[in-house]
Length: 116
Image (cartoon, rainbow, N blue to C red):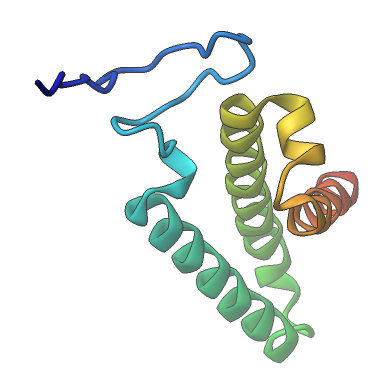
């Protein structure tokens, strides 16, 4: 006789209480294809912005626009970190299987925040 187990289908806390965001199936929002593609698009657009900034570095009238766009990208990166920390908890984020990548991502984002 088989017993069917139901997966949670909404945002929930784990028994330890350290994961705040969880998608159906337990994968988490940051592991979803949509989230990964969105992050890749943000990184690509930010790269284009950096190239445009380098090309138009002498145009004083564009500096304010570039600064505002950089702030928007920094906000996106901070949001990504917050979502992943909420899913994994602090210990999971800074001690899980993706420790090196998470430290790198956190360091780059922190540098962007300090530069803003």
